[in-house]
Image 1 (tube, rainbow, N blue to C red):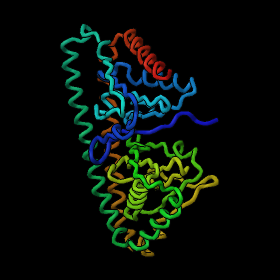
Image 2 (image 1 turned 90 degrees about the vertical axis):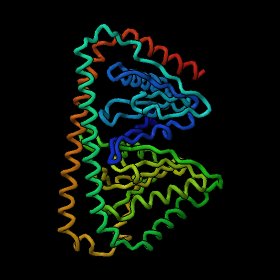
Image 3 (image 1 turned 60 degrees about the vertical axis):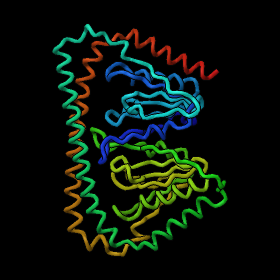
Image 4 (image 1 turned 30 degrees about the vertical axis):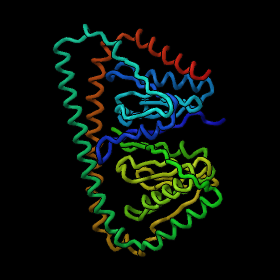
Length: 363
């Protein structure tokens, strides 16, 4: 049975703050339905119900998960219908339709202001300030962790044999792309396969790569050229008209962690912690950048220095995760106020309206 649902993130809590990729993820759609309104008004629940309904009818659905609560959905795309549905708070309204339109649907109409006391409003504002502070602390900790990671990379960058890294890149370009170039440049689609969450790193690598015939697991160390390799492969693919999905690192979105070439049925990805996997089926192979590009003995030469850096890095990542956990707790408290003030019979009418929009678009 072919899996009809695919799973991604298009928003991340990163070392560069909140990073949003919805504009690229939703590119080329005929219509985008943006659900407006505060947290707690049932938007994620409605998105999940619409996804289930589409899947039950045999449609392909792309599911975009919340980095704060990965079991919840921030958005979906009905692939065959070319329609996207997204929580306006999640995408930060930073999306555009293709040839079609962006339609806003206000979930705020279901709120009954009579259920908000003056005291409740004051508490909500206080909680929102605490939420903003928790996110800021998480981003500061991630940023510090990234600077520590740069220290870690430096040992390997200085030991890199760059001509060998170029050889690896050229070998892959020739092997992967020969006979598939169409000459007309294309624009890749930018996504996240994982995210930093309140429970630590979370990813969908296995489900995203499961349907593909070939998977290349890149092994190596920080600074051993993994992301640079992927960037060069992506740029060459785009230049030669080869469809490519570019998956950014959920910690440092300036880096790439995976490429998927749908028409080549191939994925190549950074298979190191915190998303470390190993070949377990036909079509899987390892590309070890440490072996191919590093001066032998680099690990041993700098073992003591690297151990100290790893310890500091791990501590900062744990600190950042604890701040995200605090943010999730505060966010949950805010949601309770809005949920208590929401008329869910109105929300159900909005669901039926959205369902109708989808059905009409499929005719």
